[in-house]
Length: 97
Image 1 (spheres, helix red, strand yellow):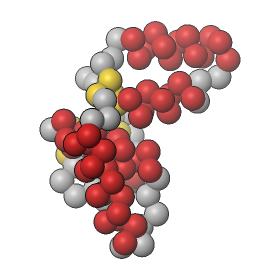
Image 2 (cartoon, helix red, strand yellow):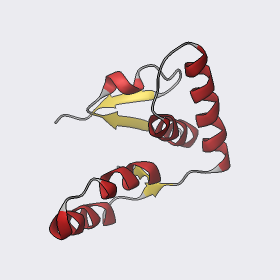
Image 3 (spheres, one colour):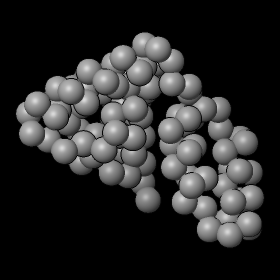
Image 4 (cartoon, helix red, strand yellow):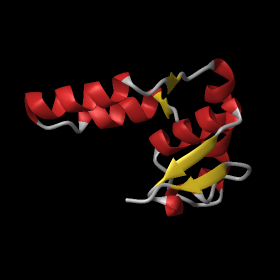
């Protein structure tokens, strides 16, 4: 299992209090993070532009996550498939809550 640098940011930014931040850091310490490479950034930008042209409002973080995962050839595990189903070519798995 891996995460992305963007997901790491989202989790740490949302941590509440020192204990929450430390627990989040402990969890993330056990999971490697895929970086935002040039290839992933270019793919994310293309996904963002294509979806914006179609009128779909897509958070930039979702585009970055999709670009990182897709360029790495990995499967995105998520509890919120609805956010990521609109990215063509992105392989999805369900992460049970």
